[in-house]
Length: 539
Image (cartoon, rainbow, N blue to C red; front, side, top):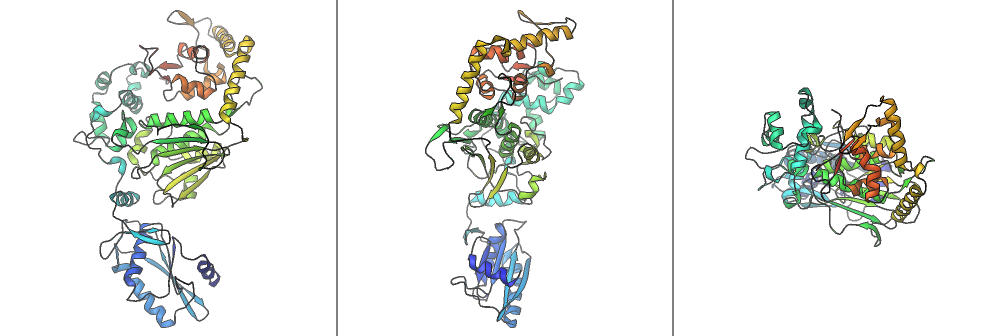
């Protein structure tokens, strides 16, 4: 640090990471030790000795004062801060003497206390005492001494898990075991949990206990409830999602294109589906092929959105009782995840694949339910598809904000544009049967018959040839991939940009069911209001 650096610091006045002290003496040593505690418990910073904190007047130290000050600072770091910390002290020569700059690093053994047992943290240019248990837990969590997703949720049991989600977890978790026994995953999806348990020779509760998702007394952990709970917000009401599409570019706007009356709830799978559905129905699609029946491309990469959303759900702080917030503006998308980056992770390192999971249970087991690899490369993949993503570690709001710019967006209502596009496409489908997806399906079906030497598969009353995946229209391929997680009819139609009606379901989804690319989650109740459609996994 140079003389010019000192002058620049003085001119910007005190702030969260910079504190001025004209002198450090035995009279104010307790206050200085409290500053060290606060900086250690926050993000670190500097104490600059030789500048009046009230006036900004520079009053350099003499040689003797420098010696006394550095000795006293070392004593405070070892005796006034518990556990003790290490200081980096630098002496800067100024006109008339020396300025002492003390660098306090962010601590790795939080929470730190003063010698009276009080915990301090920074609050702007000042500091404050900490009495809230949630804040103390957050500090323990940052050093890896505690993982909030492993904490028990009193009053819960395995009965509070959603049976369908638990079944999906078990089938994905033990897929290789089933395959070794040459058992069909598709067929097992229609079996009861008891039958699946017999195949595994373990009860679901035993499996979850062995993996740390359920405590020995049968109580669910936060991770189990958030991943597979029937209604986790009954016990964890703050862990929801809030989605708003604004007119304009200000978060203070009062006009909305899409705003739910209440926060979305449900387990992690439901929250993921809700956010992706919200994003896909409020963002524009642009036609990238000349054929007007070709699938439009979302203005922001769906692959990037999926990675960022999954990241937000799995890595958000479950100590901070606040919803995950998703905002769409005319020029950008913002995803606000409660909690700052974990200790040891920087803004730059996450772009290169650094991964220090805050919620280890959620991270390790969410891979069996959510679309990610579990290798910590989600941000890297998101940047591959959308290189200009911006990341902000907002210490003031205590949240991690991801911003994705929207492409080719004006001030018009994107939702109305989408509805107009759907009307035009459906009208063209009606007027030109040869160019409709139904016609393409029939044409591909006939081609498949020739390719397969006339071998046909029969389902119900219809004789259907399974068209090879590569020959399917791009819109049907997109539907199949979108249904990697069970989707409702409305979610599918919103995703491809068509109205949710029986005609479009017959045209776009029914052929995929008949060919075995999709399956119903409730095959015995095809008209159930809870009906969803999911991709049939390869066996």
